[in-house]
Length: 510
Length: 130
Image (cartoon, rainbow over all chains, first blue to last red; front, side, top):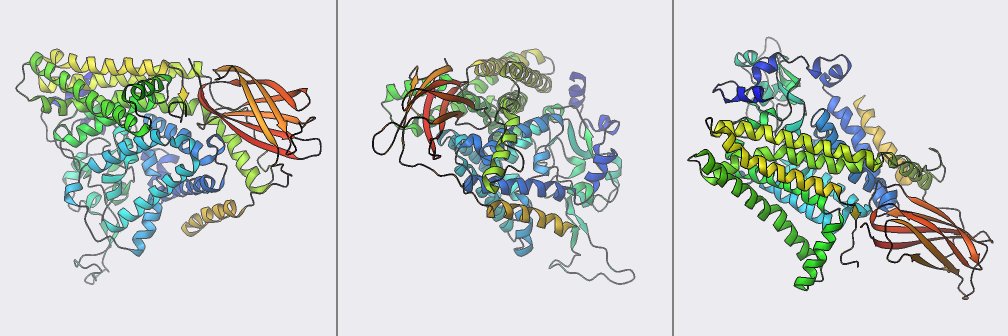
């Protein structure tokens, strides 16, 4: 790993890792069955339709099913299975949820009716809207106890469908995915830890490419021997296969950031030069320099905040499911005299998502600046090292969501049986087997610790590589402050995971 | 092919939406259900449950089959079950296990000797995990 990361330090026009990638033994698109399926142009649609079907059943059950979360498919599948599977699939493969995202199907239909005319506003071409929505969802989740509210979970799902449809019916390209979708941002950051990446097979083929279909899209061929008849206002032939709508130009694309695994680039490439290639997870996080469609993330403050919110939000979301959070809320209520939850919760959010990251990252950057004797400013150092938070943040999400998934994955069986029984009045799938649950907690707990350890090691490796880029002669000195921050986050996460689960929706026992 | 792929989910969802949700059971809505837990407030582990069924006329309802189902508010948790036995006319008792701290609710299903069924939900907030 460290050797691979060090290769990135060498100045090169070629994105780092390309040489190694060329020799990568695994290209999923060349596998016998899976590869053939994914190379099929309608494979995404074939994955989206079952997801849409599941989504429709969830919506129906949210509004017309039992309003008891443990017996409702919307609550169960959203808060246990979907969240758990997203992080596990990212860990084992990649951003397959975005690939199979059902929210985009209504969008595709809407686009047949309304051709999007506008470009996404320049002022919002960043991660701020998605950060605000991400924090908003976390806040509302805690405030309104969404995990126990099937009806509101259904409203959220419908709202998601509506937002994706409206945004992408009005604005060109994949504006919703790139700038709005909070789940997408979560998946983009998480999939920095994925073992697979949509990437170019041979860089030299791209050098000789004249059409750049992977980004521009493939245009219809004109009739042989005749001048092509234009059907677009610009006078060009219509696009029959779109290129990347997230502005990721394959030869210069780095990592999975902003990549939805839609495979449009795969289908558009006339040279069959784009694959789904195996790679070292987190390897590309350490890379500095421009990234197609994203820019240099080590200079983007919105990415710094996104990484911080992703990581500290993971701790906060897990902490909110344990006993001490209620002791804390009651203490704040006693001290302040407040009797409503939202200001207390808002205070906890400000401390956890603003003050704590600012203090820890600022202190680490100051320490790094002095220890490594670098001329870089503290904010610049913070921005460079923010990426190193992503692996430990992902480890915390994995441990938390993995806990719910592994301890409850079989509950989908009796809940589905019960839904069929209640809907049809007949036990077509058998009587509900309520005794089914999942793995015992004493088996899941070591797995949680393992996920956290993986995250810690990943963060340390990325931080070491960044420290080497910042201070080649004082790498260790630049590294230790951030290693301490990661260790602190790890210890905090282990403490949280060791607390008894206490899933309350009530405030002050009310 | 593609058209049928799109039509399939529409048909399936339509089936779910148009399916009936009713039950043929006779429900008794005029029965009062009182539940007491020991310890109170409850903690993680076994709790002694005492339940009293009273009719609209104030008389205790005896001879019922009473079953409890304890669930957490959060999805994905295995429920706890208990069958209560009648300890005196109209009074039923048993043990229900709270497996985790947090907000629970108890679903009571009682079948009266005349065949009427009672379904009742009682919230049990803040089962102590410590």
